[in-house]
Amino acid sequence: MEKIFKCFDFNHQSQHLSWDEYFMAIANISALRSKDPNRKVGCCLVDEDSKRILAIGYNGFPRGCPDSKLPWTKHGKWLDTKYPYVCHAEANAILNSNSSLNNSTAYVTLYPCNECAKLLIQAGIKQVVFQNDTTSDSKTAAQTMFNMSKVKTKQLHLKRIVQLCDNDCDQ
Ligand SMILES: [Zn+2]
Image (cartoon, rainbow, N blue to C red):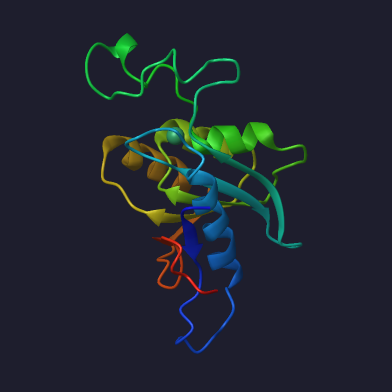
């Protein structure tokens, strides 16, 4: 592996990851699978009571649609951009799950868009923990729906993890 995650700051008092840090780290690992050159997003769905991971996902094109045949660009005519084709991390995670997502928590590396907010709510997810925030109309719409549906949201800043580094990590 050319690049690995430096997961611990060993000067920190607590030398293990909290559950929040652990699941968000997995969402970040999943994001690294994305072939989107501009934005890699990961999602990890978790059963809060058992702390079991129910599904993970990242943004990518649908199965059978090769990356070589569809565009990743954000600019140009709509059909020439990634937007009509890409499946967001949250949608992929929801669709990857084999079990009920009722009352589960979604760990996402980026605040969900309005379309994914609808899917998360309809899937029964009750809490969204996000890492990076955005400001957009899409976020405002997502926030409105989360509030109405009583889906809790909280931002998690990863202070100790998700430091992409080369092979100089000795842990
Ligand atoms: Zn989305």
